[in-house]
Length: 403
Image 1 (cartoon, rainbow, N blue to C red):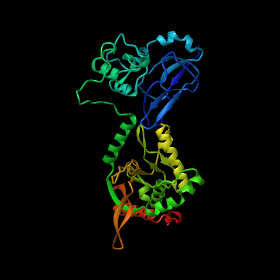
Image 2: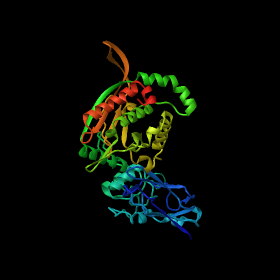
Image 3: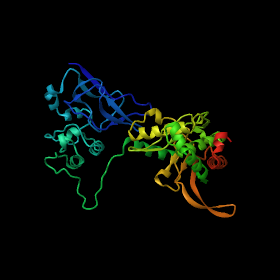
Image 4: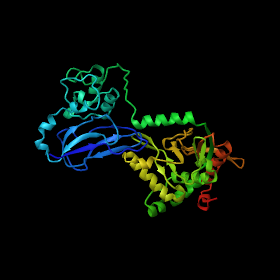
């Protein structure tokens, strides 16, 4: 017998612990080398844990929803066993292994589970300090359903004794689901930002007609040459970088009683993902052209949707851009992403009536919002910085000539 240990991968220094999401295999199942066994959620990213060897899972030490730390043992694999010869191993109740990870609340003696649970069920059990090993799964192959979890939390009974259904609340149903680690971290950082920064927001409007005209003229040729579509975000990124160069305080951060001026431009782009809002970082944007920016943003979008963003992708940043316009937002006041000191909010471009040379005309207008930390950034720098962004967007040639 050759036993391989499956351990939690090394976490970032800023990440103390993580949560096991859902085992993709159960005790007694055969696995291939490097096959993904489970995903682990931190407050920043989701990490995949591959099998260190081909073989059969002989023990699951920590069940779905368990809290773990770096290098902690979570399962064992016998590399000499084969699935057909592992009925005895499969017969071991995962509840016994799971009990080593979390104290039992009301362990039903007759309960048996495959160790697998629906994500909503795993979250409910984790919130109530329970494991799938304590719940009889009524789903396919013994899978623990949300109803099983609710029943177990409500009465500690097996699904054989209670119906597998949510707690009845008439025609006013409710569902209580614990925050994911990412959502809890987002909440924590937003509260921290509002508590520790003197946030003020200044607004301006920008006529997007010149950018739209440039994009329409060159978008087909741009995509043919660079292999990526020419969007609007690259123009906003370049305009922001243009302003940060002119007003370095917008690119600075506060460290105690010190102001840290950054000699580089790393801009975070807020991206929506299935797990919530994430902010991957475009590094050294001043050295990137429009095509470089568009390619990197597209890459981040794919990685966010697939849960493949790394800790490195999300670490750092000297300034951020939030694009509520993709969802139709007209105006908002973005919250600073600490330890940064400013963030640009861009919104939906809409045709609006504006006055030019005493005449009312229709123009595609986007409202810009710059939130800044008034502790180090005065209104002058903030207002002029936003005007610099506006001027660059209304005359994109400025970006090419660095004016």
